Image (tube, rainbow, N blue to C red; front, side, top):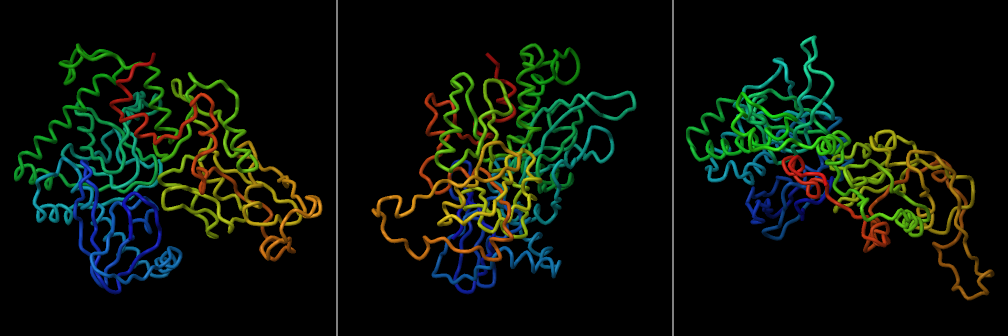
Length: 486
């Protein structure tokens, strides 16, 4: 009924039958999470967060479900706040259990101890660009506090300390972490005993395991403490390569002789990928500048398919890679807060503009990357069908308002009478009240939803244009920092 990794916002209430929840382990094995019965529900994680489902739900017996639309549940939670509180508590516990079962750190722990840890672990929500803790002494957690990211991205940085005692300017991004990962308290995040600042890249939910709970777990399961120590040692080695100078004293001195200085260009590239939000995208169009011949065929192919181009091949440059200006299909799209449901998401991730859009511009204003534009719809006869109307809206140049030009329509007479008689949906009709209201419309890339390929990628004659998942393509923080520019 629900597939892990897909998107959905509706809630499913079990009227009759039984559902099994499973999650995928690191080795792709299925891990049982829960059995849901009559009166229980599934899909609350997508409904609350808009993130991909973190587990699959499969019917074990013939099952009858009541599918409640997202808009209905959101309205109910507005009217009755206790309903939202209930779903959030339940979803936090279920999400944490699903992640703990998949984390190598917690393998071999009995279910009763997992449940005990969940009961004692508070979950906090953070908005975009909000700090979890800083390098100064205010709000810094103890070193044995364990932070588990249930969803979202955070960046880890250090700053040059100004004379006032506050950390500001000269931010050096050391790492980024994403949902499903964990890190220790403010001192041990990198294993070198020095404090760091952790800031959210997008909205995050973080489970914060208290110090006494973690220490009790270490005492009961020495192998967990050993895994934790190995992880910190890996951080230690990475930190030595990110300092920008060789260390002769302190906890990193044993690694200094063997580590190479991190290339400044690599550091700058990491900063760009994290600070400019590339890593939070799920599908990003990139262009290999070593292969690109600047023929502009990618934009022209997009225009041929959709009537006008929805992308601009020029964008932020990281090394020999250009991040094209086009929708990145963010994991947590801030553009999707639309009261008219004018922007939505397909189950496999494509964010698209619906026919309910009236071009109010809220989504374009919210997008931090200039990937959504608003176009004017002139007072002219409505195109023959929905597909023609929408294919004509897309023009080049993100972030600007433009007038729409209608594509030519061939009439039956002009075609020499060879066309079949028009059907009931293929005739021009007068504007109704909705069409009168709709003077503008938002436009954006939707990954060529409905096609078997993506026009920009397919048309590139040298293979320079590719769609990538940033966290897989660029690799982990450690892989990025250890990569040498050529």
